[in-house]
Length: 454
Ligand code: GLV
Ligand code: MN
Ligand code: MN
Image (cartoon, rainbow, N blue to C red; front, side, top):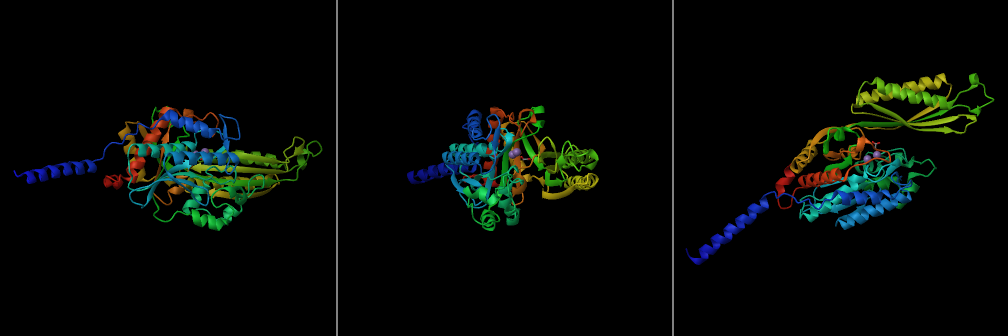
């Protein structure tokens, strides 16, 4: 064989080998994901709290929320992500893709209700940053960009409405609603949010700038603790969420005439506090009457006025939360409660006002995302099951603009929204690995575009 032909054959053979290698999905090395290291970051984040740890209280736009935001930015920068904040203060950290179409997005929240724990929401923010850092360390180059997100105000504590950031992103929030939001101290949403995003601008402008353009998100996935007991009870490592229950919330104001606790005789009273107590019991009764384990009703906030021992309550304000995986059944429970409020108010001769805060539909998670997460779990050799989320999450709203789903990890006794909320470093590590792999599948590899076919 002439020398030139021989050389040409060798070069062609080597080139073929290289191309074959590039076309094959090489397993990702995710060994840089360390559960204990992520726990350390979660514990650091937990120190930004209005109550001493292990309790975590971090209401939106408070100094501790600002500290948490700063820390999230530090971690994003350290992971090599490019950071941007939208006008509502949702913080994005981006890993660029070889193409700029339809980002794969992951994220959760860092705000915490009073006396919560260290894992609700935070895992889905810190874990997502750790997942992207590990993908980079593994040499993974995504075809689509991957965004991590810290959503503004998932918890309803301060302004009475949950998922404000994600509602804004998907166009499920009006300026009129935001204009009317005032916290318990009379601070408006506009004033409280002045230090984030484009705080201070009109809510119309903020919402217009926050709205995600059509097609900008190709998939959304959120990592979260289960907040229920099933995975732990069954000894499973991961939950692949199939659906998210429909939440509804409303505020009830009751007012009587009050009076002196000693002087005002029992037949002459119209006690707003007792009316409130009856309403709370009516919520329980109506929810139980739905006859479904998925139906839950809670009166988690009651405020009496003047709230002093020797005065008959003149005012009562309640906030009621009713959820079900079946929206029609949830709505029927809400209707029953509203009728009970009328009846109780009439019987106790108190005036009443009901304000529906939100009545959102349930969500069925996308097959595209659950398939990617299930494949990831299989590849990691993790035990898993499909389950329903009874808590709500920003995924509920992100599903309005993109195929969306969630990955759960077990938490101790299913406890959440309490200081002893806990998830083990091992389960956290597996959850973050599953998230990393799911993101890689959804984003596709720049070297191997077949990944994005899922
Ligand atoms: C979110 O924290 C919820 O209440 O489900
Ligand atoms: Mn929560
Ligand atoms: Mn949460």
